[in-house]
Image (cartoon, rainbow, N blue to C red; front, side, top):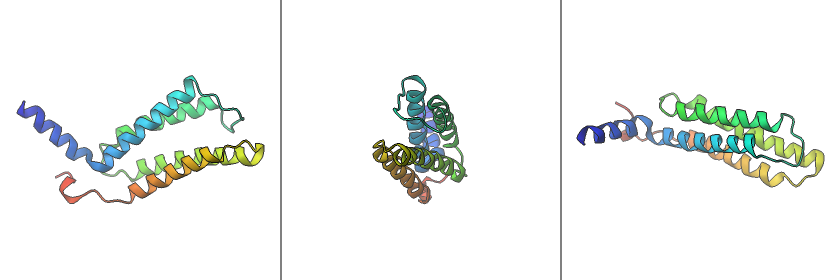
Length: 131
């Protein structure tokens, strides 16, 4: 029992708060990608097919979850931000070209991308850093 507890503490310290947020983002991205691949149905045409977007979201979700164990996580946060902002830009494009009322989705994903930027700027607490 003590060994399992020690392993859990080591894993938590290795992952840290920033890694835990990457796991959360990776899970969100993977589920959203799965939705786009299996049952997504947007009313307006996208620049990239919806199924391809879903595969991109799935792949980036897996990459983010795997990147949660690294200390140099800036590239993973950059990848997460780029995906959210590109998806927001796609909805803003639909709003501009088709007047489709998609600006709320664009604003949501833009805000999500900005939250990722904000969290990526926070340092890991000293007591949480791996030794």
